[in-house]
Image (cartoon, rainbow, N blue to C red; front, top):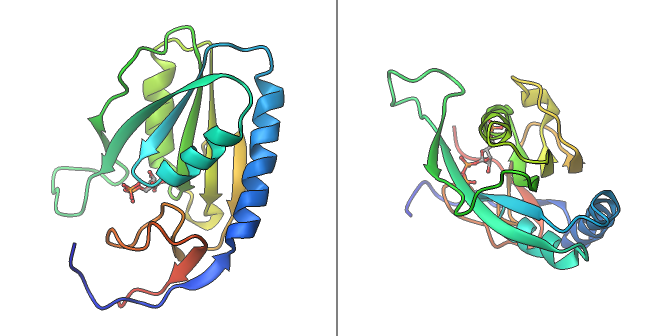
Length: 182
Ligand code: PRP
């Protein structure tokens, strides 16, 4: 994907800190779901793919993996309202009666997670919780429960560890800050 000239990413959270935090989150999740045999991790594409891969491999509790994809309406969608979210790709198998853990890379305004929590709650899971790698409290437009959180970060554009800027930098090992040209 082409775009403006590359802004230089500056490290914000090192790969080592991320790994240590993912270990802690996995340990918390293992305790929470001890004895559960129908846990489903639902990764929100695309940004969660690396976080989900690492988190799921650190869990000892048995679980299955699903993916879901959503998109925010851009400004070009003149009939859309701010915060409108649409489903691009649904999960493959039903979650009725299962314990669902949504896995998200970033909670920004909160609209995406709010939408997904409503969508999945309506399907009758045994429980529904959310795990997010990073959150920007200053950007919150809706309050959403985040049961497992990696890091709160300031209102900066972050890339790496799954997060992108114009589809770039997703595979950087650290979470970094970029300063896109206005
Ligand atoms: C990002 C992120 C979340 C959402 C959070 O997705 O992965 O899903 O935005 O924003 P919100 O809290 O304001 O709703 P993005 O649209 O960048 O897609 P991507 O994951 O495919 O990069």
